Length: 128
Image 1 (cartoon, rainbow, N blue to C red):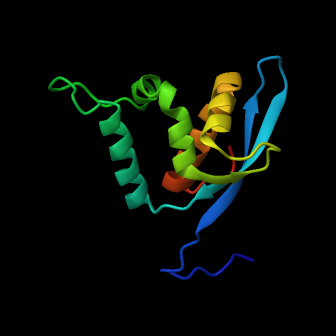
Image 2 (image 1 turned 45 degrees about the vertical axis):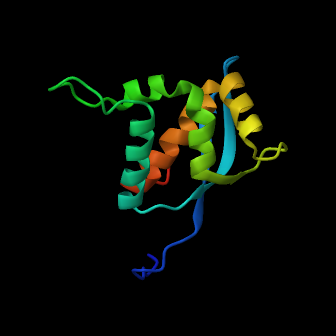
Image 3 (image 1 turned 90 degrees about the vertical axis):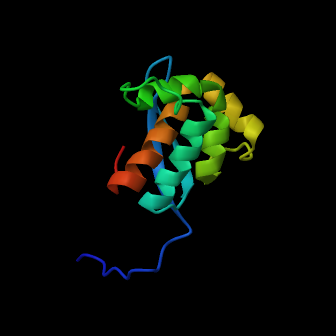
């Protein structure tokens, strides 16, 4: 039976199990507790990320590219992840340094954490 929804009762956060491919093969996973944002709030959040990356200074007629944005902000993945999650099930504490280490050692994990958040907020998807 479907759950009844009530408008205006937004959650503080939501959890997802993020799956990603390991470099040596196989699949890894991390349970992340994501900060809830409405689609509008997510849009404003992405606007700030885009502005910080300088992606708003495009020549006339050149289209925005999320792939290009992620490339430009690769060094800022830890800051982005710290802005979207408030917990994880790793033994290490959720700190900027540990998220940076995760991004360096498991780049697919960082990408999956960011994509899972985007999909959940904009599409409401449960899966990866």
